[in-house]
Structure formats: C-alpha cells, structure tokens
Amino acid sequence: DIQMTQSPSSLSASVGDRVTITCRASQSISSYLNWYQQKQGKAPKLLIYAASSLQSGVPSRFSGSGSGTDFTLTISSLQPEDFATYYCQQSYSTLYTFGQGTKLEIK
Amino acid sequence: EVQLLESGGGLVQPGGSLRLSCAASGFTFSSSAMNWVRQAPGKGLEWVSAISAGGGTTYYADSLKGQFTISRDNSKNTLYLQMNSLRAEDTAVYYCAKVSSGIYRPPIDYWGQGTLVTVSS
Image (cartoon, rainbow over all chains, first blue to last red; front, side, top):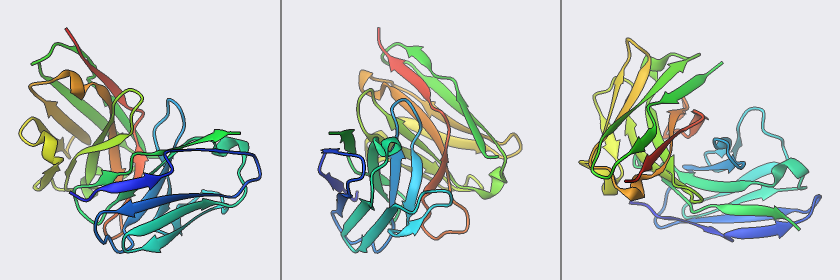
C-alpha cells in the first residue's frame, strides 16, 4: 500500500495567518493527491483534487501544489471557519490511503 | 442534490456480523464507483473498500480482506457493506462515499453523514 505522511500533526495559528500543511507519499503518485477538510462531528469535504485543482465552491484562499511524492496545502489567510482537521489522500492506487490528519487550532 | 444516507449501524458483540446500507440519490448511481471509509473514535480516516460502477470489480484494504464484502444494487440505488467477524477495532463511524465522475483516478466528492458501528460485549 502507498503510505501517506502529513506534517505537522497539529498546528496553532491565528486568524489572518498563512498556513502550510505538507503531505508526503511513500512512492510517486504523480498528481493524484486530494485534500479534505473535516470539522468536528461532520463528514469530510473535498477541497483540492489532482494536487492543485480547486473543488467547486471552495474559497480561493485554499491552494495546493506538488507532484511525485511531496505536496502542500496552503491557506493564504486563515478565517475562523477554517479551524478543522485536514487530510490528504492519494487516488493513484485504487486502494486509496489517507494521511493521518493535521488538526488546525486557534492560537 | 447528491444525497447518501447510511443505515444499519449499531451495537454488535465481538464475532458478530452487521450489514450497512447506503441509499443514494441525486446522481446516476449506476455510473459511479463507490467507497466505504471509516473513522474510529478520535482517529483519522481509513479507506475500507471500493466497488466499480457496475459492481463487477471490488477492492479492499489489505487488513480487511476476507472480513468485509462490498456490493451494490443499481436497481435500488443502494450500496452495501457486509461486515463479519467483527472486533473491537472495527468500532468506527462508517461513511458511504461517491467518487467524482469524469476525472481520471478521481477523488471522493460526496460523503454520507456516517453510521456508527460499536463492537462491544
């Protein structure tokens, strides 16, 4: 299986900050990397697919980059509603795998 | 509007079985591959299984192969997950999830609200 490793596991930041979350794959996955946001008690929501494509309806302050094994999710200016847990996921293999998550908390 | 409504969760004893269902609406179910993803309490997301649009091809996480069976009934717009030999470690919220259409190696674009499975004596 392809292993996905996110860093950091948790992050404290303030409204207005620029934040970057990293995801690394155990082998090359080309650009088949997706990012999800999950709020407490809710289902995940797709933010970014194919490494850098913004899902319809997602604010433009979210962006993604990377290819091969290293990827990043950037939030350009944190808003109060962005405090949540973020997961990366590879869809290169039909056996999908997720990163362990990054919990973004208010400083 | 895409809707995925899971049912069938509950309390089951270790070694027992349970069948989850997911009723789909708002999209062409028979054209969409589907997945199950689970989340243990306080833990991250774990992909469980996938099934092709026609139901002829199935995939499982290595740790679950032989224990769970995914299936679908396209005439009823319903996805299933048969879970056998359940253990405490299978306690989780189970999400039904639809993959995006028209994208190669697609992401999951819609999720159900989840159904809680608790394995305990």
